[in-house]
Length: 382
Image (cartoon, rainbow, N blue to C red; front, side, top):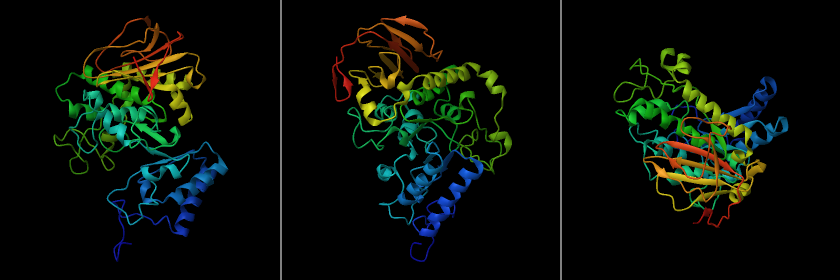
């Protein structure tokens, strides 16, 4: 309550006072029942900031007794203000007090493809080159890193971050790209779409992939009364009450966009097969992930060095390029390319000593060469 008014921090009239003992018990008892009775292995808390830290930790502790692998994550925001004291609200500022609970990373989300609150605003993959710091934040899993501003870091360990581009809320990635770049050829939009989640799937932390993004899913606005249409009336960005024709997965998209689908499969194969992309601690990220210095805006280049995570390659190099073609500093080594703009996976595509990155190209390379690395503030110098 705020005075004599109910608090409505959810915006939909269903906020609960989790800090009160019996509400907390109700929440914990509920998730325990669902986990034990239905074998639910993950719990997502919508508008998690409406809940307090003690309740979220009680949920985590109760689930740990059942199965520590059960994931707990949520949105670290509310929907318009809550009566809950901000000092105990479960959000970014209190995440350090909630071990093994993850939150959505909206900074990298909006940095990659533009704000969800401005359908025409572009991001990194559309060629905006002043957003590199927001992409780097996701790459390091949100942990404190010498190459990242302390003010930007918000996780203590990489299992506390959910890196993503899109979810069920707001425009799909494919619709967002068409809204920001209405005159861009579709083939170029496809390269943007591939790169957006190539960045997610090569970043530390927990990757989150929206259902159908690998098929270039769209949500057409077919009912302007029930749907929430963009200003052109083309796409629905809030389709919870829209008809099936808006929300359905059309499986012909898998045929029409087979190259995009296969690219996603290759990225997932790479991530699952190589522990360097899944470093479990902040210390390992700090000791093995180094950005390459001297790169222009719009080019993010980093090394997973010294057999990071026990992977079989001495060094892995990851490159994300946008806006214009650029020559890449290969640090004097010979590299095996396993991901380029067209193909992703674990098979060597070519071996190179020089390299030029295309627009919207993500590259992953490995080498077993010895490289003398001069590292300062998390960045390779020279």
